[in-house]
Amino acid sequence: MRDRFSKFEEEWKSFKWRIKLVTEELRAARYDGVTLREESNRYASKLETGLFLLPAAITWKAIEEILVVPSPPGIRMPPEAPPLRCDPAWCPDWYTKKMSAGAMTRLEADLETRSRLAEEGRQLRAEVLSKRDEFDAVHAAVTNEMARLERGYAIKDPRSLARLIEVSNGKHLLPDFLRTGFRVRVDETAAVALIEFEFPDYARVQLPVDRRKNRSVKYASATQKKKLVRMCLYSLVIRAGYLGGRILDGSACQTIAINVRQAWFDPATGAPRDGIICTVQAGVADFLRLSLDTLDPEVCFRHLKGIAIPSFDAISPVRPIFVLDKTDDRFVDRKLVDSVLPPDANLAAMPWEDFEHLVAQLFEWEFAKQGIEVKVTRASRDRGVDAILFDPDPLRGGKFVLQAKRYTRPVDVAAVRDLYGTVMNEGANRGILITTSSYGPDSYEFAKDKPISLVDGPNLLLMLQRHGKRYRIDLAEARERQEEDSA
Image (cartoon, rainbow, N blue to C red; front, side, top):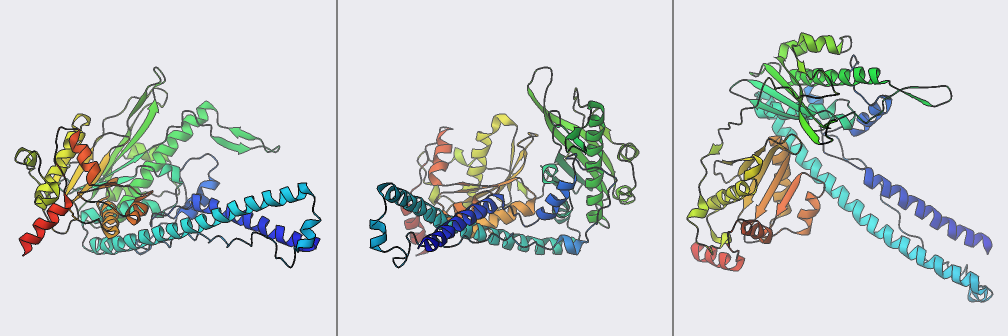
């Protein structure tokens, strides 16, 4: 009898351990369809200083390898819970009757614990299935994007080349904490590719440089640390330029500019500061001639005529050598739709082109004091991009894609997936989808943990009300009008 109870308890101990294991896997699971995280994390573990330093022997990938979409990480499915109680054959009534009151109390407490664990297991199974679906959707979107980029690369399309440099950054070894804010834009008029990324603030970070025989850690001195951090900065700049050169080689874009941003705390006041700390511009051929496994980062940076802050102790931002021109042939003049709309206009019944312009106006009102530019794109039924926001803020800023959908029915999750593909194709920081209707649970689930914001009809009205606009949304009325127009 005791052996049978022991087996029952072992089953529950094993179940509890496996639930914990799957929970940790689920929390750690990351997948963007681009970054080779397993290789990056393995590489990062070798960098005891927490830096990327040249010279380093790196296996550079061909364009065919860069276009390959890695499979989503496997997340094991948690097991089904064992029976909550012992099999009656193992635990007959005559046995439980002999148990003491204390033993019976413990048995009931154990039953409550097992019931709670079983419910956690059921919820975890649902979360795993949802995460798998999410990763599958990302894989499909990135696969479609890679197919577009392959066609774009064949004809040397500037936007495709810019996105491919970003993808290449994810495909080559680098610790995740040094990948932040890596963005690439192409100025077709100037034939310049601008690469921007963020450099972490190491002011309060100790850098381990050696392990002693007694297993204690030796940290870099202040002088060593300054040199290591500066070498890391130069190394990242050179790496970025070389990555860009490999993609741009043979294209019309033969110049690469690199701007590096950093956020830090002013030691004099403690206030947060930010700005450009490093900038360089050189030809594609200049970067491709470099031998990254033998060069000296500081000497190379000077050879490329780069400009950097003289000291990390008292940072004074530098002026970037090249600033991106935001002109785009898709942009059109904005229409002041609100000036002709009746005060109680039904937004769900207005022309879809006017709705796009109204949404652009709304975001101008929202961010008028923050220096954000809103550009409306040419009207098109492909529903790709309706407006683009340019935010100059060095921390939260970048490029944001707006899509406006004047719908009378809930927005399908396919539209949210399409937006995610557009964000990646545009090299944008975030996509914002605004509709007069609503979104289903599958849309919110897909958008979770992605650079996507969903604004439904009620929230759209609230945003408009903040600016004194009392428009309304009546979906039934709009559907009736559509039926009348089609009759």
